[in-house]
Figure 1 (cartoon, helix red, strand yellow):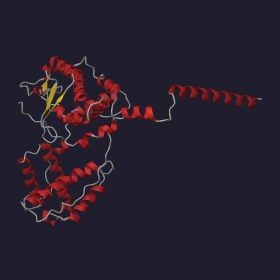
Figure 2 (cartoon, helix red, strand yellow):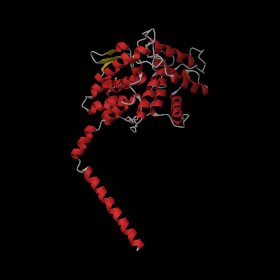
Figure 3 (tube, one colour):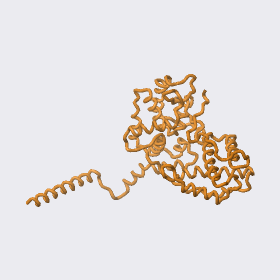
Figure 4 (tube, helix red, strand yellow):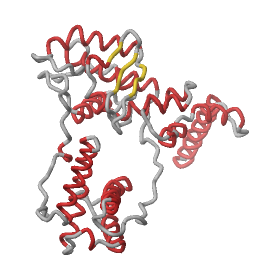
Amino acid sequence: MWGKKKPLPAYLRPQPFTVDTSDPRGMGGLILRYLEWMQIQNYSKETVAGRRVRLRQFAEWCDERSITMPGEVTKPILERYKRYLFYFRQKNGKPLSYHAMVSRLVPVRMFFKWLTKNNFILYNPASELELPRSVKRLPKHVLTEKEAEEVLAQPDVRTSVGLRDRAILETLYSTGIRRGELSNLRLYDLDTDRGTVMIREAKGKKDRIIPIGDRAIAWIEKYLKEVRAMLAPDPDDGILFLSRTGDHIHPDHLTALAHRYVDAAEIGKSGACHLFRHTMATVMLENGADVRFIQQMLGHSQMSTTEVYTHVSVRQLKQIHTATHPAKLDREKVKRLDIAESDNLASAKRKASISKTI
């Protein structure tokens, strides 16, 4: 079937509520009603599943404190929940990150906004709930062009799996698409004549068309000709990249695949699919691409999200620094100075040794 949907990650698969959902005006019952409304409004199944997980966690926290009705929730109670998240420790002993805290608080805010709008409660206790301050973090690792080529050269293209993996890595590097977007690509999404790829129902349920390089297309065509025909099931569901058994490749498998080849390259950097996304954006900026085009390639709705790559791309800043900063010294001269100093030190040690023996 061409319309087959990709499976949800394990952590997003529905878990039974431990709180009472029989009361249609209670916390559990209204959460289920809110999730149903989201589905009717055509929110993505990933968004609905994520909200379900976070709201179930909030409802269980409330239930432990004998809070069973949304009308019993006040702003001080929500502030207590916020403090609870701050002091919460995961199984590895680490606290929740900023993003993890926000991912648990935003669904609660949206839920109470919906409750107020639909007159289930008189006022919104979450209207003034402040989220933790954002942390602007740069990507941990970004590959240079040389390092990217070393990673791309790791798959053994003499094997069917290696040829498929090379086509996958080339696609990630050329387009910078997310792993879930690549996992969901279909044969008709690739336009080799125009050199474009259609990404359907990406983050925010938005479609976009982006360019893909000739080299990536060449490897995909080689994979289609020599490998995919052997892997494709009957009937063929049209998924572009298939697993060894002819099934849909899960995004988690793509992460493991990319991570394995990055480690095999022994470049001293770690990462997986998103590493190629960071690298694509950075090298294009360093080679003169406008940040607005990078935003379109990555599918960012906010320019501020894309602008992080202007801080990672430092090649032009390095050139200006080298040309204008007065503290300059030829590297070869430094090497000669180091050699001379080491020779002088060795000579001094020999003289001291001779004086002791005398």
